[in-house]
Image 1 (cartoon, helix red, strand yellow):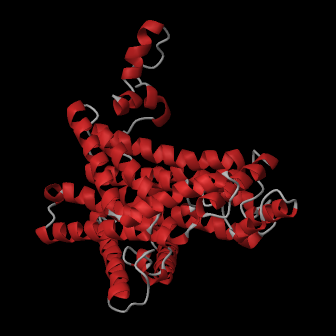
Image 2: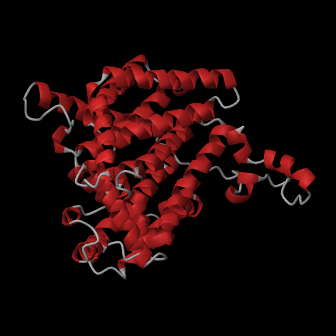
Length: 430
């Protein structure tokens, strides 16, 4: 599955269904396997993180008019959920190394990038920009490569700890170089912004108590970003286009890339206001947009888009506040558990990967419906299965985010500051 995720939807589906059938059949035939499986399901944090969103999406099918569309959207969240559970069980109970699976994922992304460059320079079968190997959408490709960059960067920092040979380091460095170039050629501004913001947040977290090193690192990232901007015509053109699109939108010209997004978000907000708690149904976004077009509240060309290019606005419109809250809960839970392990348990090679990729998708999802794209949902589920773990004695998430057990219950203003200093939030910020 690690090799098939970037390269073939059919390969993902075949390996995914094969694993599910194996789990079902073997759990019936082998009582020891069945006990391991039930024990795993009762303890994994993945259920607490993802299940609320999946339940909301499943329930919204029942009040959707277009059941086919509703199931298509919901199945992506189901795939994310099941793949994360399957991979996590294999890693945890079958003694498979997470980083071995992650390396296979990197190899498949590297192969996809090389195929893309062969298509451009050897076969002349596609343009360099936007970079779309094997016809993959450039936005999907850019975000998959971003995941690979975070994985490669963390593995390189932990070469000695993981006892990885030198040729693996060479392979990872080659991938980072090709992936970085490919992301630029993809012309995906959302992935660029998410990469930059995630880099800032990771340096802040890693160096938050080394103020001088933190300032130097952030200044270095800033200067590097400016240097890349000045040296890349592609980036300059795309950013200039974005600025021009915003100016055109203010003047009333809305049929641009950014202008269309603004209109889709505005339309999604209008749909949300019709049913703010539960939304119109996860399958009825297109129907609601067509109704707005009929009422002449938005231009006709917006009906060409089957989603608002933002997970947040899509969930607000189709599943309401409850859907958006369950989505944000998934991010909050995964990020906080990962941060706890990074700060207190020093599990760099897994928790850092989980944290970086989750933060990236948190940002990038504002500009595209990434979690309702089959390849992205499967890739994130695979990565969560490899990296998202919670120890038995890990902290009680909600209370200890602000206070530790021994500090909770202090009521006087005098004791409030020491209590706050005992919590994870204080350790993250200071």
